[in-house]
Image (tube, rainbow, N blue to C red):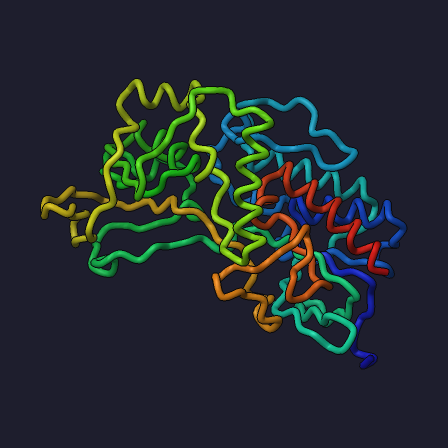
Length: 350
């Protein structure tokens, strides 16, 4: 090994729910921080993606924050901003772990070098026996392409850019997307502006209680895609949208009137398939995110189907690499469970 390399047993990339859970289980498994493993995080401060959620998102409106291992979140003010509560919780957890997460450290590449994986970063290169990747999706917003996008004279923004509804007061906003975030933003913006809701598929609202058996079945469908080397897709596309009291209130006041996708954008709005138009001042693309995995490109992990084939947490094309918070584990509860499994596999390979 070159003396310029820092040699460790395990590198964890990312310090959100999955990364912090992985650090917890690695330490419990007997690895020492710094000498046995390091945690690299691109953020300036604790919180992961939660630090970037829109400021008007309240704890009462989030889908749930699963406890980090051994450290309950406890009771929180349901009206408190999620972008403050969860980062503070993560910061307290990092302090409880008793070792520093190295930040801000951006990882540019992971590549093979004999029996090790080299992790190139702002803090130098780490040579690891195994890498746990927990980089999430927030840094990779998905922008679909439609004709006329460059001609539209209004504002276009993604969920990742949204900071609150007030800037849209008295405007007309086209909200694109059929997920829970799209519905939440639609509800907020509709309080101060006229809105048009557009989705590719007819939304399915679920009024029944989505129990453990149904959740397991939904996650299993995503697992099947990942095991087949296909892009994971979203669990929400399988489960449908929960008809919570807040969403039911939007329906009752007529906000959830859905339109099929427009054919193109025009300078002053959007144009439907029949040639008619809807004037608009802004288009809010609430079209989801993709896994942030560009740094893994040197490993050439993509399958012919476009995804990365994963069994458990192990990447089939590179079993020294473990993906957590990917596919079926892309939720707070799923990320913690996947971290436990990944660490079990990492320790078994020593």
